[in-house]
Length: 480
Ligand code: TXE
Image (cartoon, rainbow, N blue to C red; front, side):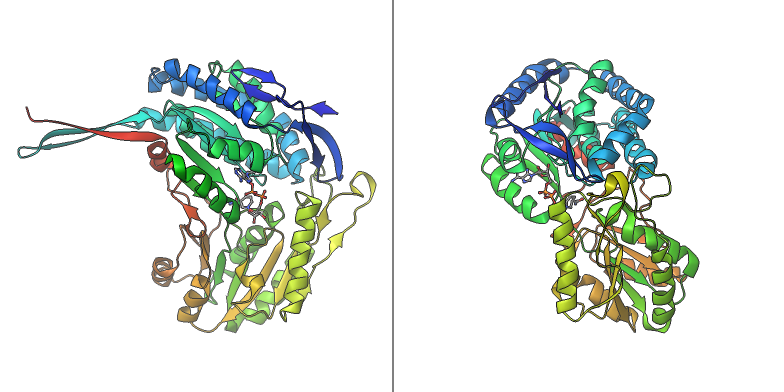
Protein backbone atom coordinates (compact mmCIF):
# COMPACT_ATOMS: atom_id res chain seq x y z
CA UNK A 1 0.00 0.00 0.00
CA UNK A 2 1.12 3.53 -0.80
CA UNK A 3 2.47 5.52 2.13
CA UNK A 4 1.30 9.11 2.09
CA UNK A 5 3.80 11.63 3.49
CA UNK A 6 3.79 14.96 5.23
CA UNK A 7 4.86 17.98 3.16
CA UNK A 8 7.29 20.17 5.12
CA UNK A 9 9.64 22.82 3.74
CA UNK A 10 8.78 21.83 0.20
CA UNK A 11 9.72 18.18 0.76
CA UNK A 12 7.81 14.98 1.43
CA UNK A 13 8.81 13.55 4.79
CA UNK A 14 7.81 10.61 6.96
CA UNK A 15 6.24 11.15 10.38
CA UNK A 16 8.71 11.37 13.25
CA UNK A 17 7.01 8.48 15.03
CA UNK A 18 7.11 6.25 11.95
CA UNK A 19 3.44 5.48 12.69
CA UNK A 20 0.69 5.36 10.05
CA UNK A 21 -3.09 5.02 9.84
CA UNK A 22 -4.94 3.13 7.11
CA UNK A 23 -6.87 5.17 4.55
CA UNK A 24 -9.98 3.54 3.11
CA UNK A 25 -11.80 3.77 -0.21
CA UNK A 26 -15.47 4.13 0.90
CA UNK A 27 -16.80 2.58 -2.33
CA UNK A 28 -15.00 -0.71 -1.65
CA UNK A 29 -14.55 -0.60 2.12
CA UNK A 30 -10.87 -1.49 1.59
CA UNK A 31 -7.71 0.27 2.71
CA UNK A 32 -5.74 1.60 -0.25
CA UNK A 33 -3.01 3.65 1.44
CA UNK A 34 -1.72 4.74 4.82
CA UNK A 35 -1.30 8.24 6.18
CA UNK A 36 1.14 9.62 8.79
CA UNK A 37 -0.15 9.53 12.34
CA UNK A 38 1.65 12.82 12.92
CA UNK A 39 2.32 14.30 16.33
CA UNK A 40 3.63 17.47 17.97
CA UNK A 41 7.16 16.86 16.68
CA UNK A 42 5.89 16.88 13.09
CA UNK A 43 3.86 20.03 13.73
CA UNK A 44 6.88 21.71 15.34
CA UNK A 45 8.95 20.89 12.25
CA UNK A 46 6.25 22.41 10.05
CA UNK A 47 6.01 25.56 12.18
CA UNK A 48 9.81 25.92 12.12
CA UNK A 49 9.84 25.66 8.32
CA UNK A 50 6.97 28.13 8.08
CA UNK A 51 8.69 30.66 10.35
CA UNK A 52 11.87 30.42 8.32
CA UNK A 53 10.01 30.86 5.03
CA UNK A 54 7.95 33.73 6.39
CA UNK A 55 10.98 36.03 6.56
CA UNK A 56 11.03 36.19 2.76
CA UNK A 57 7.44 35.37 1.93
CA UNK A 58 6.06 38.26 4.03
CA UNK A 59 8.28 40.67 2.09
CA UNK A 60 7.00 39.55 -1.30
CA UNK A 61 4.56 41.85 -3.06
CA UNK A 62 0.90 40.97 -3.62
CA UNK A 63 1.74 40.79 -7.32
CA UNK A 64 4.50 38.20 -6.69
CA UNK A 65 2.18 36.08 -4.56
CA UNK A 66 -0.67 36.45 -7.04
CA UNK A 67 1.49 35.10 -9.87
CA UNK A 68 2.53 32.02 -7.89
CA UNK A 69 -0.99 31.23 -6.62
CA UNK A 70 -2.31 31.67 -10.16
CA UNK A 71 0.26 29.12 -11.27
CA UNK A 72 -0.99 26.70 -8.60
CA UNK A 73 -4.48 27.04 -10.14
CA UNK A 74 -3.06 26.40 -13.60
CA UNK A 75 -1.08 23.35 -12.51
CA UNK A 76 -4.12 21.94 -10.75
CA UNK A 77 -6.28 22.57 -13.82
CA UNK A 78 -3.79 20.65 -15.98
CA UNK A 79 -4.27 17.65 -13.65
CA UNK A 80 -8.02 18.10 -13.03
CA UNK A 81 -9.12 14.59 -14.02
CA UNK A 82 -6.31 12.97 -12.00
CA UNK A 83 -7.21 14.96 -8.88
CA UNK A 84 -10.91 14.25 -9.40
CA UNK A 85 -10.16 10.54 -9.33
CA UNK A 86 -8.18 10.94 -6.11
CA UNK A 87 -11.06 12.89 -4.56
CA UNK A 88 -13.71 10.39 -5.61
CA UNK A 89 -11.61 7.49 -4.32
CA UNK A 90 -11.08 9.18 -0.95
CA UNK A 91 -14.64 10.38 -0.34
CA UNK A 92 -16.85 7.85 -2.14
CA UNK A 93 -18.56 10.68 -4.04
CA UNK A 94 -19.44 10.18 -7.72
CA UNK A 95 -16.45 10.89 -9.95
CA UNK A 96 -18.76 13.05 -12.07
CA UNK A 97 -19.20 15.37 -9.06
CA UNK A 98 -15.48 15.53 -8.29
CA UNK A 99 -14.85 16.42 -11.94
CA UNK A 100 -17.63 19.02 -12.19
CA UNK A 101 -17.66 20.50 -8.68
CA UNK A 102 -14.84 19.68 -6.27
CA UNK A 103 -11.69 20.22 -8.31
CA UNK A 104 -13.01 23.07 -10.51
CA UNK A 105 -14.01 24.89 -7.33
CA UNK A 106 -10.55 24.34 -5.81
CA UNK A 107 -9.05 25.84 -8.99
CA UNK A 108 -11.52 28.74 -8.76
CA UNK A 109 -10.58 29.32 -5.11
CA UNK A 110 -6.89 29.73 -5.96
CA UNK A 111 -7.69 31.93 -8.97
CA UNK A 112 -10.23 34.05 -7.12
CA UNK A 113 -7.91 34.96 -4.26
CA UNK A 114 -4.87 35.50 -6.50
CA UNK A 115 -6.98 38.11 -8.31
CA UNK A 116 -8.60 39.54 -5.15
CA UNK A 117 -5.27 40.35 -3.50
CA UNK A 118 -4.45 42.73 -6.37
CA UNK A 119 -7.49 44.85 -5.48
CA UNK A 120 -7.03 44.60 -1.71
CA UNK A 121 -6.06 48.17 -0.84
CA UNK A 122 -5.39 50.07 2.39
CA UNK A 123 -8.36 52.14 3.53
CA UNK A 124 -7.73 55.85 4.18
CA UNK A 125 -9.74 58.45 6.11
CA UNK A 126 -9.08 62.17 5.75
CA UNK A 127 -10.41 64.96 7.97
CA UNK A 128 -9.25 68.39 9.08
CA UNK A 129 -10.01 67.49 12.66
CA UNK A 130 -8.44 64.03 12.82
CA UNK A 131 -5.76 64.24 10.14
CA UNK A 132 -4.92 61.56 7.60
CA UNK A 133 -5.60 58.00 8.73
CA UNK A 134 -4.37 54.95 6.83
CA UNK A 135 -5.55 51.47 7.78
CA UNK A 136 -2.77 49.22 6.59
CA UNK A 137 -2.88 45.43 6.72
CA UNK A 138 -0.07 43.01 7.32
CA UNK A 139 0.06 39.20 7.31
CA UNK A 140 -0.38 37.40 10.64
CA UNK A 141 2.63 35.08 10.29
CA UNK A 142 2.15 31.29 10.61
CA UNK A 143 -1.51 30.22 10.43
CA UNK A 144 -3.31 26.88 10.78
CA UNK A 145 -5.88 25.60 8.26
CA UNK A 146 -7.85 22.48 9.20
CA UNK A 147 -10.34 21.03 6.76
CA UNK A 148 -12.98 18.25 6.74
CA UNK A 149 -13.63 15.16 4.64
CA UNK A 150 -16.76 16.07 2.72
CA UNK A 151 -15.27 18.47 0.16
CA UNK A 152 -11.56 17.93 0.81
CA UNK A 153 -9.58 20.05 -1.68
CA UNK A 154 -12.52 22.42 -2.26
CA UNK A 155 -12.49 23.46 1.41
CA UNK A 156 -8.73 23.10 2.01
CA UNK A 157 -8.01 25.51 -0.88
CA UNK A 158 -10.79 27.85 0.34
CA UNK A 159 -8.63 28.39 3.41
CA UNK A 160 -5.06 28.22 2.19
CA UNK A 161 -5.55 30.43 -0.90
CA UNK A 162 -6.43 33.62 1.04
CA UNK A 163 -3.85 32.77 3.69
CA UNK A 164 -1.08 32.53 1.06
CA UNK A 165 -1.99 35.59 -1.02
CA UNK A 166 -2.03 37.79 2.10
CA UNK A 167 1.59 36.79 2.83
CA UNK A 168 1.09 34.19 5.56
CA UNK A 169 2.79 30.82 5.84
CA UNK A 170 0.51 27.85 6.44
CA UNK A 171 0.45 24.66 8.48
CA UNK A 172 -2.49 22.83 6.97
CA UNK A 173 -4.16 19.57 8.00
CA UNK A 174 -6.73 17.76 5.86
CA UNK A 175 -9.00 15.13 7.36
CA UNK A 176 -7.30 11.80 8.04
CA UNK A 177 -10.21 10.24 6.14
CA UNK A 178 -9.44 12.10 2.90
CA UNK A 179 -5.73 12.97 2.76
CA UNK A 180 -4.84 12.30 -0.87
CA UNK A 181 -5.52 15.51 -2.81
CA UNK A 182 -3.84 17.59 -0.11
CA UNK A 183 -0.92 15.15 -0.24
CA UNK A 184 -0.55 15.63 -4.01
CA UNK A 185 -1.04 19.40 -3.70
CA UNK A 186 2.57 19.61 -2.49
CA UNK A 187 3.83 18.61 -5.95
CA UNK A 188 1.59 21.24 -7.55
CA UNK A 189 2.93 23.96 -5.24
CA UNK A 190 6.55 23.03 -5.91
CA UNK A 191 5.92 23.07 -9.67
CA UNK A 192 4.24 26.49 -9.34
CA UNK A 193 7.33 27.88 -7.60
CA UNK A 194 5.88 28.30 -4.12
CA UNK A 195 8.96 28.60 -1.87
CA UNK A 196 9.55 25.69 0.51
CA UNK A 197 8.01 26.17 3.95
CA UNK A 198 5.31 28.61 2.81
CA UNK A 199 2.75 25.80 2.70
CA UNK A 200 3.26 22.80 4.99
CA UNK A 201 0.78 19.92 5.04
CA UNK A 202 0.60 17.70 8.09
CA UNK A 203 -1.43 14.53 7.85
CA UNK A 204 -3.02 12.78 10.80
CA UNK A 205 -5.65 12.60 13.50
CA UNK A 206 -7.56 15.60 14.73
CA UNK A 207 -7.02 14.92 18.41
CA UNK A 208 -3.26 14.53 17.86
CA UNK A 209 -1.87 16.47 14.87
CA UNK A 210 -4.91 18.75 14.76
CA UNK A 211 -4.79 19.73 18.40
CA UNK A 212 -1.01 20.25 18.19
CA UNK A 213 -1.77 22.88 15.54
CA UNK A 214 -4.66 24.56 17.37
CA UNK A 215 -2.66 24.83 20.62
CA UNK A 216 0.69 25.78 19.07
CA UNK A 217 1.97 29.07 20.61
CA UNK A 218 3.51 30.24 17.33
CA UNK A 219 0.41 29.75 15.19
CA UNK A 220 -1.52 33.03 15.09
CA UNK A 221 -4.88 31.97 13.66
CA UNK A 222 -6.95 28.88 13.00
CA UNK A 223 -9.34 28.51 10.09
CA UNK A 224 -11.45 25.40 10.66
CA UNK A 225 -14.34 23.65 8.95
CA UNK A 226 -15.92 20.62 10.54
CA UNK A 227 -18.30 19.52 13.24
CA UNK A 228 -19.76 21.87 15.81
CA UNK A 229 -18.48 19.71 18.68
CA UNK A 230 -14.98 19.81 17.23
CA UNK A 231 -15.30 23.56 16.79
CA UNK A 232 -15.98 23.86 20.51
CA UNK A 233 -12.89 21.78 21.33
CA UNK A 234 -10.74 23.86 18.99
CA UNK A 235 -11.99 27.11 20.52
CA UNK A 236 -10.85 25.94 23.96
CA UNK A 237 -7.51 24.80 22.57
CA UNK A 238 -6.84 28.08 20.75
CA UNK A 239 -8.09 30.44 23.44
CA UNK A 240 -5.02 30.55 25.73
CA UNK A 241 -2.84 31.91 22.91
CA UNK A 242 -5.53 34.36 21.72
CA UNK A 243 -5.54 33.01 18.18
CA UNK A 244 -7.90 34.50 15.60
CA UNK A 245 -10.60 31.91 14.88
CA UNK A 246 -12.71 31.20 11.82
CA UNK A 247 -15.10 28.31 12.50
CA UNK A 248 -17.37 26.90 9.79
CA UNK A 249 -19.42 24.27 11.55
CA UNK A 250 -22.55 22.19 11.15
CA UNK A 251 -26.04 23.05 9.95
CA UNK A 252 -29.65 21.83 9.95
CA UNK A 253 -30.85 23.95 7.11
CA UNK A 254 -34.52 24.67 6.38
CA UNK A 255 -35.78 24.44 2.78
CA UNK A 256 -39.03 26.46 2.86
CA UNK A 257 -41.41 25.69 0.00
CA UNK A 258 -44.54 27.78 -0.65
CA UNK A 259 -47.47 26.77 -2.86
CA UNK A 260 -46.79 29.69 -5.22
CA UNK A 261 -43.31 28.44 -6.18
CA UNK A 262 -42.12 27.28 -9.61
CA UNK A 263 -42.80 23.66 -8.72
CA UNK A 264 -40.60 21.88 -11.26
CA UNK A 265 -37.54 24.09 -10.64
CA UNK A 266 -38.07 23.69 -6.90
CA UNK A 267 -38.42 19.90 -7.18
CA UNK A 268 -35.31 19.40 -9.32
CA UNK A 269 -33.24 21.65 -7.05
CA UNK A 270 -34.63 20.13 -3.86
CA UNK A 271 -33.43 16.69 -5.01
CA UNK A 272 -29.93 18.19 -5.28
CA UNK A 273 -30.09 20.16 -2.04
CA UNK A 274 -31.30 17.02 -0.24
CA UNK A 275 -28.97 14.34 -1.56
CA UNK A 276 -25.91 15.86 -3.28
CA UNK A 277 -22.64 14.39 -2.05
CA UNK A 278 -24.71 11.77 -0.23
CA UNK A 279 -26.15 14.59 1.90
CA UNK A 280 -22.65 15.23 3.28
CA UNK A 281 -22.63 18.98 2.69
CA UNK A 282 -23.16 21.41 5.57
CA UNK A 283 -25.41 23.43 3.22
CA UNK A 284 -27.83 20.61 2.39
CA UNK A 285 -31.47 21.38 3.14
CA UNK A 286 -32.21 18.54 5.56
CA UNK A 287 -35.46 20.04 6.96
CA UNK A 288 -38.00 20.49 4.16
CA UNK A 289 -40.88 22.76 5.16
CA UNK A 290 -43.83 22.55 2.74
CA UNK A 291 -46.96 24.71 2.67
CA UNK A 292 -49.88 22.44 3.64
CA UNK A 293 -51.88 23.09 0.46
CA UNK A 294 -49.25 21.42 -1.73
CA UNK A 295 -47.92 18.94 0.82
CA UNK A 296 -49.49 15.78 -0.66
CA UNK A 297 -48.50 16.70 -4.21
CA UNK A 298 -44.96 17.47 -3.08
CA UNK A 299 -44.63 14.17 -1.20
CA UNK A 300 -45.78 12.16 -4.20
CA UNK A 301 -43.54 13.98 -6.70
CA UNK A 302 -40.51 14.14 -4.38
CA UNK A 303 -40.64 10.43 -3.52
CA UNK A 304 -41.03 9.48 -7.18
CA UNK A 305 -38.09 11.68 -8.20
CA UNK A 306 -35.97 10.31 -5.35
CA UNK A 307 -36.65 6.74 -6.49
CA UNK A 308 -34.99 7.62 -9.81
CA UNK A 309 -31.65 8.36 -8.15
CA UNK A 310 -28.99 5.76 -8.85
CA UNK A 311 -26.89 4.51 -5.97
CA UNK A 312 -23.79 3.04 -7.51
CA UNK A 313 -20.10 2.75 -8.09
CA UNK A 314 -18.72 6.31 -7.94
CA UNK A 315 -16.72 5.58 -11.08
CA UNK A 316 -19.84 5.03 -13.17
CA UNK A 317 -21.01 8.13 -15.03
CA UNK A 318 -24.70 7.73 -14.19
CA UNK A 319 -24.21 7.31 -10.44
CA UNK A 320 -26.06 9.95 -8.42
CA UNK A 321 -25.24 8.71 -4.92
CA UNK A 322 -21.91 7.19 -4.01
CA UNK A 323 -20.67 5.79 -0.71
CA UNK A 324 -20.71 7.51 2.67
CA UNK A 325 -17.32 8.47 4.07
CA UNK A 326 -16.90 5.66 6.56
CA UNK A 327 -18.68 2.64 7.98
CA UNK A 328 -18.82 4.46 11.32
CA UNK A 329 -20.56 7.42 9.69
CA UNK A 330 -22.92 5.11 7.76
CA UNK A 331 -23.93 3.44 11.02
CA UNK A 332 -24.37 6.88 12.63
CA UNK A 333 -26.71 8.00 9.85
CA UNK A 334 -28.68 4.72 9.90
CA UNK A 335 -28.91 5.18 13.65
CA UNK A 336 -30.73 8.44 13.04
CA UNK A 337 -33.24 6.64 10.80
CA UNK A 338 -33.95 4.27 13.70
CA UNK A 339 -34.26 7.27 16.01
CA UNK A 340 -36.76 8.84 13.60
CA UNK A 341 -38.90 5.70 13.77
CA UNK A 342 -38.76 5.77 17.57
CA UNK A 343 -39.75 9.46 17.55
CA UNK A 344 -42.89 8.63 15.58
CA UNK A 345 -41.62 9.34 12.10
CA UNK A 346 -42.75 7.48 8.98
CA UNK A 347 -40.08 6.41 6.51
CA UNK A 348 -41.71 7.31 3.16
CA UNK A 349 -38.72 6.04 1.20
CA UNK A 350 -35.27 4.51 1.79
CA UNK A 351 -33.82 4.21 5.29
CA UNK A 352 -31.64 1.19 4.70
CA UNK A 353 -28.11 0.12 3.85
CA UNK A 354 -27.59 -0.75 0.19
CA UNK A 355 -25.49 -3.71 -0.96
CA UNK A 356 -24.00 -3.34 -4.41
CA UNK A 357 -22.40 -6.06 -6.55
CA UNK A 358 -18.89 -6.34 -7.98
CA UNK A 359 -16.00 -4.22 -6.70
CA UNK A 360 -18.30 -2.19 -4.43
CA UNK A 361 -19.92 -5.16 -2.67
CA UNK A 362 -18.23 -4.17 0.62
CA UNK A 363 -18.74 -0.43 0.19
CA UNK A 364 -20.60 1.91 2.57
CA UNK A 365 -23.82 2.76 0.71
CA UNK A 366 -27.33 3.67 1.79
CA UNK A 367 -30.52 4.76 0.08
CA UNK A 368 -31.70 8.37 0.00
CA UNK A 369 -34.20 8.60 2.85
CA UNK A 370 -37.38 10.64 3.24
CA UNK A 371 -39.04 10.88 6.65
CA UNK A 372 -42.42 12.42 7.48
CA UNK A 373 -44.59 12.93 10.54
CA UNK A 374 -41.93 14.15 12.99
CA UNK A 375 -42.43 17.03 15.39
CA UNK A 376 -40.22 20.04 14.54
CA UNK A 377 -38.56 19.89 17.95
CA UNK A 378 -37.61 16.20 17.99
CA UNK A 379 -33.96 15.11 17.94
CA UNK A 380 -34.11 13.95 14.31
CA UNK A 381 -35.18 17.47 13.31
CA UNK A 382 -32.71 19.18 15.62
CA UNK A 383 -29.44 17.30 15.21
CA UNK A 384 -27.12 17.36 12.20
CA UNK A 385 -27.27 13.93 10.55
CA UNK A 386 -24.95 14.70 7.63
CA UNK A 387 -26.24 11.96 5.35
CA UNK A 388 -28.85 11.45 2.58
CA UNK A 389 -31.74 11.94 5.02
CA UNK A 390 -34.44 14.63 4.91
CA UNK A 391 -37.44 15.30 7.11
CA UNK A 392 -40.69 16.74 5.71
CA UNK A 393 -42.53 19.27 7.87
CA UNK A 394 -45.84 20.88 6.69
CA UNK A 395 -46.79 24.43 7.68
CA UNK A 396 -49.91 26.60 7.26
CA UNK A 397 -48.67 30.17 7.50
CA UNK A 398 -45.56 32.19 6.71
CA UNK A 399 -45.24 32.98 10.41
CA UNK A 400 -45.27 29.27 11.28
CA UNK A 401 -42.66 28.52 8.62
CA UNK A 402 -40.26 31.12 10.01
CA UNK A 403 -40.87 29.90 13.56
CA UNK A 404 -40.06 26.29 12.62
CA UNK A 405 -37.05 27.34 10.52
CA UNK A 406 -35.56 29.34 13.41
CA UNK A 407 -36.27 26.70 16.05
CA UNK A 408 -32.77 25.27 15.69
CA UNK A 409 -29.43 25.71 17.45
CA UNK A 410 -27.91 26.05 13.98
CA UNK A 411 -28.05 28.99 11.60
CA UNK A 412 -25.97 28.20 8.54
CA UNK A 413 -28.15 28.40 5.40
CA UNK A 414 -31.76 28.40 4.23
CA UNK A 415 -33.65 28.14 0.94
CA UNK A 416 -36.95 29.86 0.18
CA UNK A 417 -39.18 28.87 -2.76
CA UNK A 418 -41.92 31.34 -3.75
CA UNK A 419 -42.78 33.47 -6.77
CA UNK A 420 -43.64 36.37 -4.42
CA UNK A 421 -40.24 38.07 -4.11
CA UNK A 422 -41.54 40.60 -1.57
CA UNK A 423 -42.56 37.70 0.65
CA UNK A 424 -39.24 35.95 0.00
CA UNK A 425 -37.24 38.99 1.05
CA UNK A 426 -39.45 39.49 4.10
CA UNK A 427 -38.84 35.92 5.20
CA UNK A 428 -35.11 36.08 4.38
CA UNK A 429 -34.81 39.01 6.76
CA UNK A 430 -36.41 36.96 9.54
CA UNK A 431 -34.60 33.64 9.14
CA UNK A 432 -31.47 33.18 11.30
CA UNK A 433 -28.96 31.96 8.73
CA UNK A 434 -25.73 33.30 7.25
CA UNK A 435 -26.50 32.20 3.68
CA UNK A 436 -30.01 32.38 2.20
CA UNK A 437 -31.00 31.31 -1.31
CA UNK A 438 -34.26 32.43 -2.94
CA UNK A 439 -35.51 30.10 -5.71
CA UNK A 440 -32.08 28.52 -6.06
CA UNK A 441 -29.46 26.56 -4.08
CA UNK A 442 -25.64 26.51 -3.90
CA UNK A 443 -25.20 29.52 -6.17
CA UNK A 444 -21.95 30.93 -4.85
CA UNK A 445 -20.39 34.30 -5.67
CA UNK A 446 -16.98 33.93 -4.01
CA UNK A 447 -16.94 37.65 -3.19
CA UNK A 448 -19.78 37.20 -0.72
CA UNK A 449 -19.31 36.42 2.98
CA UNK A 450 -19.83 32.73 3.76
CA UNK A 451 -20.62 31.35 7.20
CA UNK A 452 -23.24 30.72 9.82
CA UNK A 453 -24.82 32.02 13.00
CA UNK A 454 -25.44 30.36 16.36
CA UNK A 455 -23.85 26.86 16.52
CA UNK A 456 -23.00 26.99 12.81
CA UNK A 457 -19.86 28.94 13.37
CA UNK A 458 -17.87 32.05 14.13
CA UNK A 459 -16.76 34.51 11.49
CA UNK A 460 -17.08 34.44 7.71
CA UNK A 461 -14.97 33.09 4.86
CA UNK A 462 -14.89 34.27 1.26
CA UNK A 463 -14.17 37.55 -0.46
CA UNK A 464 -12.74 40.42 1.57
CA UNK A 465 -13.78 38.65 4.79
CA UNK A 466 -11.14 35.98 4.20
CA UNK A 467 -8.42 38.51 3.38
CA UNK A 468 -9.34 40.51 6.49
CA UNK A 469 -9.23 37.35 8.61
CA UNK A 470 -5.70 36.49 7.54
CA UNK A 471 -4.31 40.01 8.16
CA UNK A 472 -3.76 42.35 11.10
CA UNK A 473 -5.06 45.90 10.80
CA UNK A 474 -2.83 48.84 11.72
CA UNK A 475 -4.19 52.40 11.81
CA UNK A 476 -1.56 55.05 11.10
CA UNK A 477 -2.60 58.62 11.85
CA UNK A 478 -0.67 61.75 10.83
CA UNK A 479 -1.70 65.35 11.29
CA UNK A 480 0.22 67.10 8.57
O1 TXE B 1 -15.47 16.23 11.40
P1 TXE B 1 -14.46 16.75 12.44
P2 TXE B 1 -15.88 14.76 11.24
C1 TXE B 1 -20.00 17.61 10.70
C2 TXE B 1 -20.88 16.44 10.43
C3 TXE B 1 -20.03 15.29 10.84
C4 TXE B 1 -19.36 15.88 12.06
C5 TXE B 1 -18.12 15.18 12.40
O2 TXE B 1 -22.00 16.49 11.28
O3 TXE B 1 -20.79 14.16 11.22
O4 TXE B 1 -19.04 17.21 11.66
O5 TXE B 1 -17.39 14.96 11.16
C6 TXE B 1 -9.97 17.73 12.52
N1 TXE B 1 -8.39 19.57 17.04
N2 TXE B 1 -19.27 18.07 9.54
O6 TXE B 1 -15.61 13.87 12.42
O7 TXE B 1 -14.18 15.77 13.52
C7 TXE B 1 -10.16 16.46 11.75
O8 TXE B 1 -8.97 15.69 11.73
C8 TXE B 1 -8.05 19.92 15.79
C9 TXE B 1 -19.69 19.32 8.98
O9 TXE B 1 -15.16 14.37 10.02
O10 TXE B 1 -14.97 18.05 12.81
C10 TXE B 1 -10.54 16.99 10.38
O11 TXE B 1 -9.37 17.40 9.70
N3 TXE B 1 -8.55 19.34 14.68
C11 TXE B 1 -18.56 19.96 8.25
C12 TXE B 1 -11.39 18.21 10.72
O12 TXE B 1 -11.02 18.57 12.05
C13 TXE B 1 -9.46 18.36 14.85
C14 TXE B 1 -17.90 19.01 7.28
C15 TXE B 1 -12.89 17.92 10.71
O13 TXE B 1 -13.10 16.86 11.57
C16 TXE B 1 -9.88 17.93 16.13
C17 TXE B 1 -17.53 17.79 7.97
C18 TXE B 1 -9.29 18.58 17.24
N4 TXE B 1 -9.62 18.25 18.50
C19 TXE B 1 -18.22 17.35 9.08
N5 TXE B 1 -10.78 16.92 15.96
C20 TXE B 1 -19.00 21.18 7.46
N6 TXE B 1 -19.37 22.23 8.17
O14 TXE B 1 -18.96 21.17 6.25
C21 TXE B 1 -10.93 16.74 14.64
N7 TXE B 1 -10.13 17.60 13.96
